Amino acid sequence: MAPPRPIAWHVARWGEEPWSLGGWSMLPPGASPADRAALAEPVDGRLVLAGEAVDLEQPTMVHGAHASGIRAASWCLEEGSAAERVIVVGAGMAGLSAARRLAEAGREVQVLEARSRLGGRIHTVELAGVRADAGAAWLQQERRNPLLALARRLGLRLVRTDFRSPRAASPEGPVPLARIEQLRDAIHGAVRRWDSPPGGPADRSLAEVVAPLLAGSDPGLRRALGWTLEAGVVLESGVPIEELSARWALREDGVGAGDHWLVEGYGALIEHLAQGLDVRLGAAVRRIAWGADGVAVETAEGELRAARCILTVPLALLRIGRPALEPGLPAAQRRALGRLGVGVVEKVLLRFDERWWPRAESGYLRWHDDPPSWVEWADLSDGAGAPLVAGLIGGPAVARHHRGRSDEEIARAATAALARLAACA
Image (cartoon, rainbow, N blue to C red; front, side, top):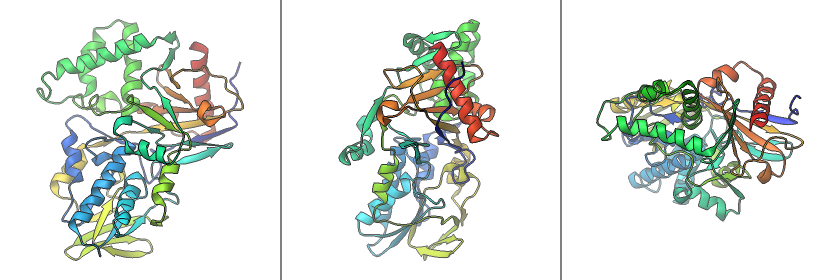
């Protein structure tokens, strides 16, 4: 029997959207957190970069973007006088956090955003009366996430999701949690043995390091290890394991430490941060030039001037020279920019008349098919008060199952994957 047809859907296309061109940053072989640190260094006392890619404590995370924005704003406050004007490029979490900090300190600050909306890679949409996030959606790492505390102060609803305890299935049937933990431990063990002591051998790709583990396994175990790598690594980074640093792929913290879904959506936090700020939407920045007399920021409407500029555009845009930077980044930062990478993870939100998929106590479902498609599913129904699920797809699977299809085709294909999961769970 065919699964029910969703009554509404939203398909994210972050890899194609011109102001993102991808998901979040990642470390290929040979890259390291030192490259993030290099990019975070202020340039000529005039320009500083902010965003998840340049945060050292929580890279790839929304609260890492928030922290980097605060750090960039603090630099502006330390360097300049109270009369200085600052331009912030980008109205995502990093940009709005920086602008809020500057405004609260009494500085004149203007935010320029290319899109016609706030949020950047945060985008809260409405589906048949319920809100959900098409981009970033979870508040992670509870003990060190100030955005969780902010959400609680604002009285926003939070639902815990345990990404460490999925209800998982493959075409062969249910996959027990103990089996998932065993496979995860085997992969981490292979990396630890290779990198012991840490920093010893030259960096390699994760694929090279786990190859002996895969080669020494029977076909069933090999297949299961591949499923675990897809769900636990490829969907965390947005790239195949051949493109990931073995040294850092499993070290940079991700999900699994106090993850909370924000029922009202991240948009509620974005709206709070933006209150009272001078934000110009639809203001794509073409060029940023700086010198001894300050910074000139060029848009289609003309040139704006300030003492300093905080640039928060995604890493993928910086890598292709958008906006143009004059006289350009220093050599060390150009090298760091060339070493860092960007992954692609897409999301589909499906709203139904009734809930027909299996329940998971953790709120998290996982589908291990071959080749991989929509691997991760978050059941948002209880918090949303309506049947709603979010499916995620990442890395090479995006090209196979996502690109070149209409939104409706993607919604139907994702629903079919969810139905296969339901039949095998």
